[in-house]
Length: 336
Image (spheres, helix red, strand yellow):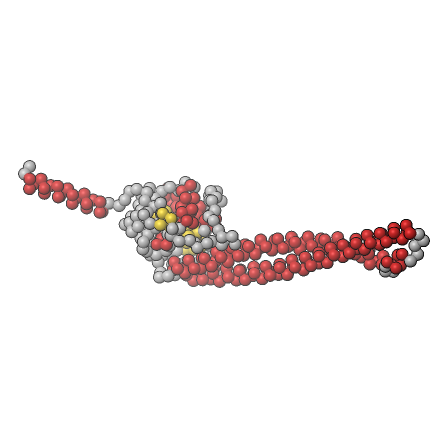
């Protein structure tokens, strides 16, 4: 083979190899940012932002509601104990009043005037001191029980008002979510996907008040070269721990939903790439994965889930979905 011909063959083989690399979709379990293998998603402008803001306010109100109701249980217990103590002390105080009425008010003068000896005087003085101490203690206990009951009742009234306020917030967020979801066909309730046999996931960390803390895209995404939030990473690990280990991609530098913020993952139905469910195994895998996410949504901090023309949002439940992508080829998970 001549030198010019040999050079031509090398150039041709290099070009073929480069073209092959360019057109072949990746077959591994990782998807790079902007990877052509990831599903194409789109939606109405600002839909993701509206759902994010609405979902966050809903989650905050729900956390505050749960905290208020827990406080009410505690205050009701305190009020019950205070009232039980009042009921216990009332007969004793009543007996003290009746005795005083029958015999006249016992004073140091009346108790000591008719003493006939020094010993009797000392005995009566000691008895009078002890009796007054007992009566004073009972009266103090009664007043303390009354004060405790009054304070518990006032605090309980405050918590009941707070409960009503948070319920109003939750109702408003539900209305806002329904308006937003109507843009993608979310006008009808569906049976959705849920299974009581789904594993229970490890809960993600919350703030001391029960709310979800703000998190940035600060940890490495195990599915791409991008980043995700710690809460998204926890959800990713829990999904895989539950047995769902097929292809998945989380971070993407562009596009809708929460992918560019590191707060979303697309769970494929197959070992590599994405394609519509075309057999019972793929459909069942998507159903079971979705059921796991919804059952553990409150533990993981999930914002919403989309799968097979349906969307689940905590404030609204399952509704129909007819966005540009019907999500028949993957389960979409967005995080708070």
